Length: 174
Image 1 (tube, rainbow, N blue to C red):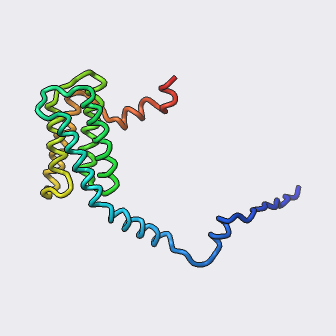
Image 2 (tube, rainbow, N blue to C red):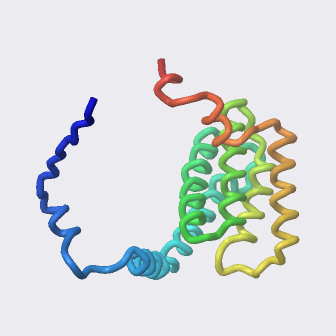
C-alpha cells in the first residue's frame, strides 16, 4: 500500500505575513528591552512594597488580637508584596511575605487571632524590605528558618501546598 502525501494549506494571515518579513528584533533583544522596562519601574515597586508593609503594620498596631478584617488586610497586602518581590527579584522578601500569607490564612481557617506571630513576620519583612540595611545571607537564611518554625508550631501549611492538595478550584466549589 502506497502512502499518500497529504497537502496542508496554511492561509496567509497578517500575523504570518508580518512574521515572515525581514527586520524586527531578536528574542534576546526583546527580553533585554523588557527587563530594562521592568527595571525602570523598580522605584515605584519599592514604594508600593513600603506602603503595603505600613498597611500591614497598621492592621496590627498596638493590638494583642488581630480581628478577621485585619487578617484579610494582611492577606491582601501580603499578596502585593509577594507579587512585587517576586517580579523584582527580592527572593528573601518574597519568601517572608509568603510565610506571612500562610500564617494569616491559617489564622483565618482556625479562628486564631493572636498578634504575636504576625508581628514577628512583619519585623522580618521590614528588615528584608528594599532600601534597608543589607543582611548577610546567613542572617537572612536564619530568619527564614525561624519563620518556618512559627508556621510549623501552629501547624499551618503553605497556601501553595494546600491548593495543590485540594485539586482544581472547580472541584472544590461543587
